[in-house]
Image (cartoon, rainbow, N blue to C red; front, top):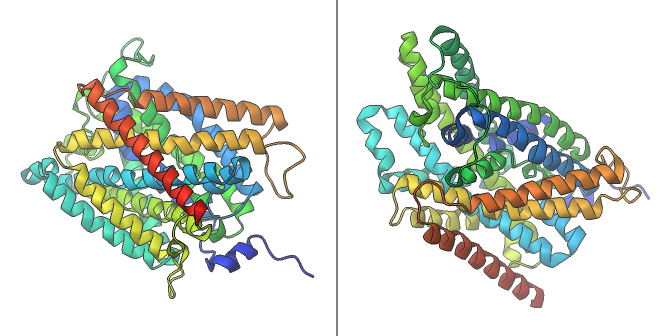
Length: 471
């Protein structure tokens, strides 16, 4: 009897279609991981000292997570990513909790990403409409419109949604490349707007800026996204590792060179959280005599945000889809659209809950405060599955147990232990730093909101698992 091709059994069982090729995966990684907003967080928080912190996060988080995803994806090339790997390593209960955190984190991440996206659209409108970025009703309404366009595209299947992802990747690359080139021009012609002083490259970790290092590590997260759609990737054992290597080089260069260019173009104290990239481009273009680049780049940055929203919606919706197949969530979550073969119930449910959180997120706070809180809460919840990722690598990455085609971590068992331990420790430190309130926020109110929210999230997830187990 002939052996079925890789993933054919689960693909036949779920009805999913393999739509993502190598370049789709590269663009998916870029649009999902590269957040130009992390330039603003790192440059505004640390100045030039952010550059060695990007290198540190690359070595201690990005490299270990990339190697872990390559090992585990080629070891278990199936739908669900971290959810599936944690199940293999620690059982169904831990698998469900890791998947639950990954899914619910994205419910919170969408409002955070959409605030940044709409902020750039407002910048494109010019100074007369600048006040709209501080209006919670306006920001919430536009965020909802954009979000449901993204949901609709994904319900129509990856064959359609991947073009939104790819367009978002180009919307990230072009402004990043332009700002880097303008930064070089500004440095040669005018000097740096933020001067590099002696010792300026040495990070000074102040209590109120500790959470910024967590944001830098978070800026490198997301290589697990493609693995969530393992049964929708063409030749995953071959294309996932290649995509991680190619996109890894691109992502690292964008972050390091872009942060430096931002500081060259703008004084550190003038770097805004929502429109700093477009503002930096505007500052340099004014010196050069151009008057059209900043608005165009703000539009492209907004498209990058839309593409990132689409990529994460596509990935995170596969968690409740697989959990529905496993019957830990109602079986309806495991259904596919009869025409588009997309997990439409999981997508629509994700859209409905995220829409509610978008509205709630603006109640009683200003826009920037909501943005900072959502950023830290997202980091804490999202990094819980990363603790599982590195723990699963340590348990499963044993020589002699890997199936044929697995790309194991260099150095054998010793290399696996080093990468797993470094990645786990960096993730744990990032979670701890994210619990430090930024700026002038009340310490106890901030901790109550973060820790209380996490406790409710995990508790509700556990109750759902127990219900599904009884059913």
